[in-house]
Length: 240
Image 1 (spheres, rainbow, N blue to C red):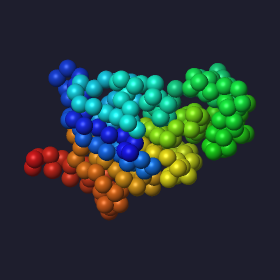
Image 2 (image 1 turned 135 degrees about the vertical axis):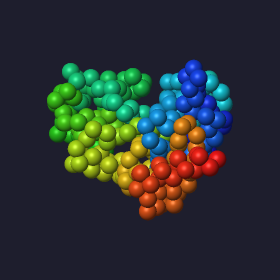
Image 3 (image 1 turned 90 degrees about the vertical axis):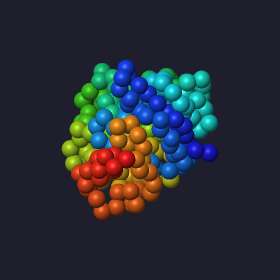
């Protein structure tokens, strides 16, 4: 089973086509990178996968379920970490995780065990009683990652996980994500090619809403920096 599958997936905003007839397969249990410059269509694609946005045409399935007709089933299958973390600064870390788990339908002993698991997984123990608003950006991102894993989903989508972090914080978040490889499907949406090289085994490159390249990360990104890659994309588009 593919973790995510799209066929002819299209999203228009008026005359602007943000995602254009996209056919994409993301295999189960892979670390997969969605790459492209700002405006390539990555975030629009993710919003359709998660059900936050309806397609204009085509279809998308998440582990065999449609975000359009089976949104509850899709929510059970995935965790989502937004580019801008949606955290409650007035809550403690423990209080926020309780709230997030409750929103996922977890309660009682199941919720307590889920919180213990993600706290250990993302090394949040010393921060449990701290207010979320008083944490560093790096720890806030760890909390955001932890909430996505509370219900132990087989698929997690992470949108720009290290944007705005300093080098130490970036390394900490990347270490946490790298440790998850092979356990479940991780979809990493980023324009940072070095991050993609480190954290993914396969990638897809989007440009103006279209899929231009997909394959093993080392083949697609091997030896080229971001500027060279995007220049190559532009030249390829002009030749097409």
